[in-house]
Amino acid sequence: MSVARLLAAILVALLPGVVTAKVLRVSPTAPHAYRTVRAAIDALPSFGGEVRIAPGTYREKLWITKPNVHLIGTGKRAEDVVLVYGDSSVNVGNTYNTPSVYVAGDGFRADNLTIVNDWDKTHANAQAVALAVSGDRAVFSHVRILGNQDTLYLVHPQNERSRQYFSDCYVEGHVDFVFGNANAYFHHCELHGLKRANIFFTAQSRDSPTEDSAFVFDHCRLTGYAAPGGVFLGRAWRLYARVIWLDTQIDIPVDPRGWREWYPNRSTTLLTAYYAEYRSAGIGASPTTREPHAHILTEAEAAQWSLDNFFHGDTSWIGLSSPGSAN
Image (cartoon, rainbow, N blue to C red; front, top):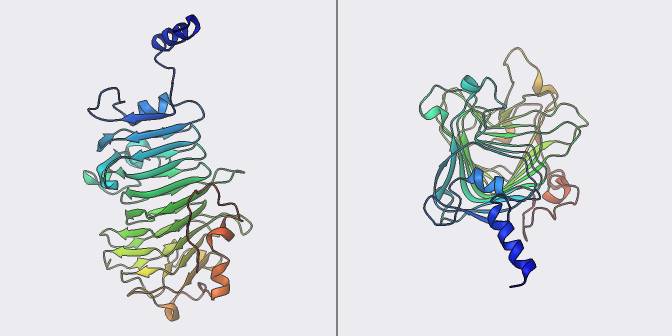
């Protein structure tokens, strides 16, 4: 070994913070692996990298600000790797600080793992986010996202783009459990409503009629509890909420109106929100009884919400060979 290479090796050995590879491993027991996901993410270079996580349950709160972080569960199923924490608005004071995993860095990816907020397992219901995403170009594949109220929070930073793509994912909750304001596209995902008096699958919060923001669900499936107070496709958190369901299999008895006011008999959000469906099927599909201001799309109108159109032709960051469309 040359003197220069020997000195470099000694320097690396003396500086534990130096990262020599962009692929790091996390395991509860494996030698030379990080014991926590947080430690592995912290050890990645500033430009990001890959973290491969062995089966196990990791109770830690993750706030990810580095770009291009890729978390991969190495188990056989998404259930084998669980990232869990249990904050709520009750104990941290607001919804924003509750996520078990918060992704602020651009170019994030997650595959084959589960993200959980388990506050409601031992406490009364409260806003308790499992996953929040404000970074741009985030991709989730075969990820389970579990909570109750406000499970998945999609954040649109002011004057910045926030695009997310979910493929073959599972999201469960009951009140407004997919909520926020971003350009989010869900393909072949299942949304499952948990037992409660009312269930609201979405609460989108687009602020103005010119804002480029919407939730699109393409060939997804809705399942869950037949809530006595009604199951609704969504309610508008802000005046110009925009949610589109394409070829949805609705295997839960949705209220015939489909959508509900934020505050019944007080607010008028249904007048300005854009709520739409195309070719819904199943026991909850009822195009002739939907709320009068909702839209039942034609084939041509639905095509405007295809993946390529939704992201204005810029889908290379998704990295899937056949990511699907509205057809």
